[in-house]
Length: 226
Image 1 (cartoon, rainbow, N blue to C red):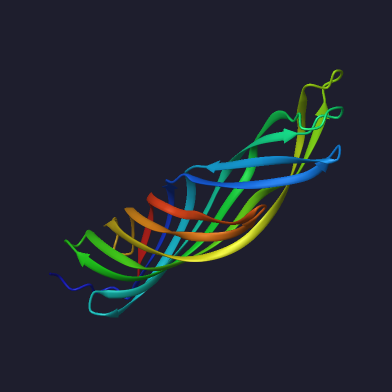
Image 2: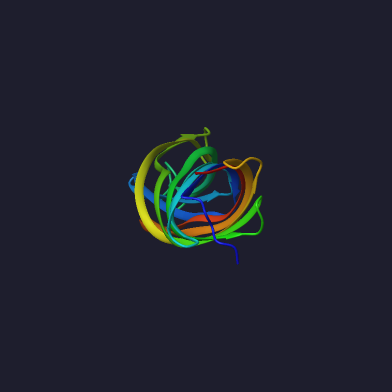
């Protein structure tokens, strides 16, 4: 195996992160002297993200590095409600409402021990892994507004839903492989595949929810060696 001669590396990438994140909320309020209840189902998927990484050689082919990822995707929420009747007790009416414009944001800091394997003067492969630290901003449903559909009031609609954002953090891990092709002695391009994931507990209505963060990340970008 060839010795790695560089002092360190820098990379900037655009990547796609996979993953489906689902969790629920429950809300209630008093309406017409009875309890109205609302169940909320959240679901968000994958999307694009930016990635910046750097590292320094500490011994032979071993480097200590860190990668920072910024990920944002739309979060859909479906609200299903049971609303009391204004004229009759114990005769609830059902209603539903959907929002597709909520937000799920993740900032990931991935600490890595990286082993750089030079294949030849142009190509090298880096295997890296370590702990990950996630910060999440998540939109939640904070309130529901209903609208009566007129006499005999056997139907009701959910007219709108208010939102609020919470921020929490959690810890996970990461492991990945990067392939670099150097065009010059200092600049080149590369491809990487990484899994970085964990869980974050958020204080949702109805109780704390544990949601998955991160996922499989596949990216392409610029590489620099110094």
